[in-house]
Image 1 (spheres, rainbow, N blue to C red):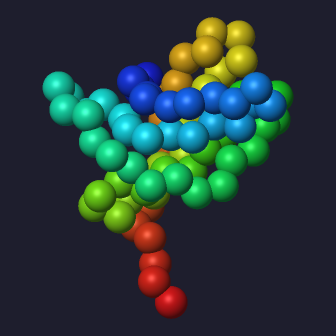
Image 2 (cartoon, helix red, strand yellow):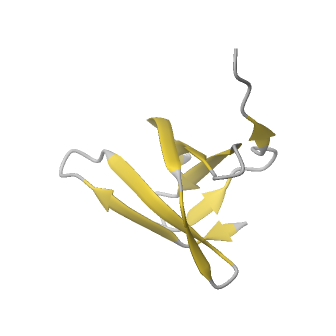
Length: 77
């Protein structure tokens, strides 16, 4: 699933995601860890509903996508 993402990317490639677009609304999100592999830049985000998504920016297209099966509820310990 393609996503519209409001983010900043540093000169070193570190991404800071601030919002994602759902429908016609921009929603603020929290951000967790991130990593780079052959598939692109992966970032964990948390929605206000406490759902955690893994999103990926593909290096060949620079398009953000939600990783399949990435929705899960956060668990407080």
